[in-house]
Image 1 (tube, protein in one colour):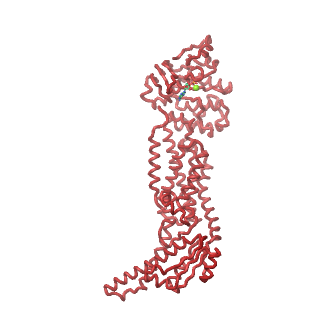
Image 2 (image 1 turned 90 degrees about the horizontal axis):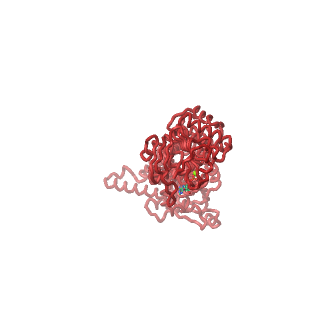
Image 3 (image 1 turned 180 degrees about the horizontal axis):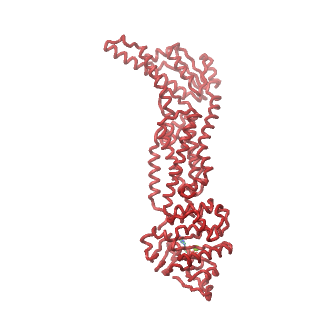
Length: 376
Length: 224
Ligand SMILES: Nc1ncnc2c1ncn2[C@@H]1O[C@H](COP(=O)(O)OP(=O)(O)O)[C@@H](O)[C@H]1O
Ligand SMILES: [Mg+2]
């Protein structure tokens, strides 16, 4: 213990619970993700897709719908499908009408897809959106092709590229790109249509939830260290209590960053979560925001229990408003402004929670440079 | 040397200290007596720089209090009435924690010796399992880590067993007579006060304590 800073004594003493709170969010995230994955497999939403149009484009659209994890797609006749929809055996029905490809190529929006839903449809809205965005993409591709063709026509080079060749090229291009994109993007903010907007649970969101809670359990030292009966001692020490607390904050933050690095490794290997360098800054700022929040709130509280209870409430609030859980329906859509300011949302969309950072650092400065309670 | 000149303290409407003046030389032990609410703790806190007086001046070794509170605190050891130690820490952890934050460097062995000097054993034991007497000793030991020249104790022997009480008294005498520290402390135990103190200051209106000390061979001075 000699030679060790005073700020590390508590850490050394409470190392067991410390390690526990550092590791627990990682373990719980892996557990929830695995359990939920199994559950999600068993509870796929049944829909029917009827492909009337015998074209490459229609078939591809049907394949992309089938590729959505959350759906169990059945290929049956329209009458049977509608009957099952009425019986609520199917969530919704999508009909790619005869002439789909022609309609796309001629840019006729009205003729594309027909969706059927019942009053108990759960996935209709989300599937419809996905389907529309895929169709939209097909349409803009065809539009671009016709513009290019028009240009060539004007310059008398009609033969060099024909319409089909351009579309073919554009599709190849997109395929190559989307391989890259799915590798880099995650969460529902990214707007590539390749990405499925239909994940009930987001690993990073689950991790954020448990991490917020654990941060409050990790930072309860602030309540213990600022015990009123001990305040008198800080008059006779070589550094002020605030400076001491700030040093503790730095040490604990360093530890939590270590655990974040560990969680990146665990997620990469156990959850096949794609992790790239562009996640580092958002992760680091999310962590700093979280620790500052836990630290500053601890100044207000006197008792550990109400403090950690508040921590759990905050974790729930930020995770739900951040859109980490059930981003399926329009529930969070009404709350977009809340969602935009949740630091969890920043983590999911891989941005920096600027507003939170500025607010918390300013509060920290006010606390640090503000007058203490004592006169002398 | 501690000089207190015309110190007054008012809390909102209440006048607690009126024109308190006295001097203490190094190596002297002075007791402070008075009924509850007389202002003993208030006076100790003012001398300890915890509180500022409403009027009057204080000097320690010729240095004005109001010029340099922070500097003076290095030379003052204040033992609060309420025990201020980390309950969940061991004696060792408490001592080393405050040693690291103190102005003076001491080795772990020196810290342990400081405790042993006042019969504070149980070095590796957690504070919450210690007896009241041991806790009081630790409360005192922590305040001595800065090697203060002026030691102020607010009821250091209240509510503890006789043995611990006598060990603390003996240690305080040693600190004054051998190490030349100036000590001002409060107590309700008149036997202890008469045995230990060179002089006793009495504050408050109630003549109970001065009367009690009459004829015990100790100098009693009435303040304010
Ligand atoms: N912070 C304070 N605000 C107002 N009144 C106080 C405060 N501290 C002490 N007092 C009052 O000052 C008087 C002296 O208190 P104190 O110095 O604690 O007395 P003692 O230690 O001799 O029992 C008491 O009447 C007490 O109620
Ligand atoms: Mg008192």
